[in-house]
Length: 236
Image (tube, rainbow, N blue to C red; front, side, top):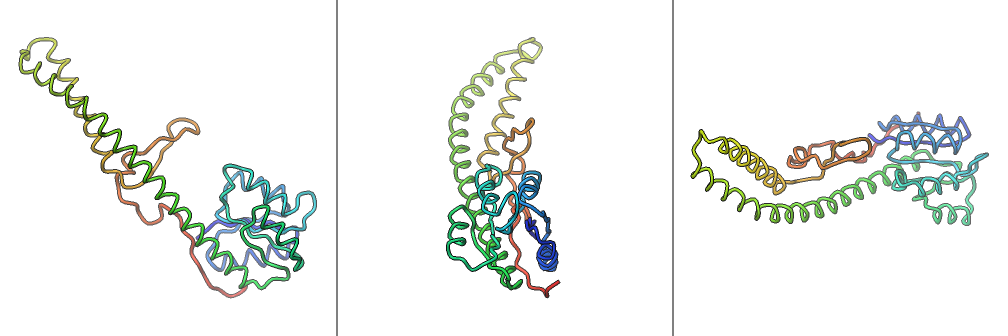
């Protein structure tokens, strides 16, 4: 199931499109104007946007430009609904950043097919991005593991030597034990770097995210990357 935002100032179009997309098991959010639609997108980023072109105040072209100019929204697939089969209007929409278009009055089955095609493409792009991110992460993790292990081995060796020469009742033995235990902990973390299988992050503070080492060392579970699901259904 994908979350789809539909922007159109015609309530009848919103009703028909919403019913059809919901029958295909998609979650649908609607907006009756461009400004409202962009605001809704910034509040909750959808998986795909469908927007009419001819709207008052903020038309579909302006919506496309706003989305493509926003770092958090720019990767969202966009379908524009144009009221006439005007080649220049279609070209303008595509040049401004739309991914596809449908001419009004449109066949609802055609719209659904285009939606599902773009969602499949989005899923492939997300997986490609994940693969690139994982490749970079693995390279960094391998380098870090090597660079940390070398001095760590020396530290552990000297600590072990000092512990053998120090009596357990000596106050310094406790400090050496603490160093040895923490060195072992570092070694465990380095080993986890070697076991990274995917990229997973967690919130560190505010908007700052860091690598979630525990989740990154586990195999990806179904649903971790939300993919597109095609669907057929009757008109609502």
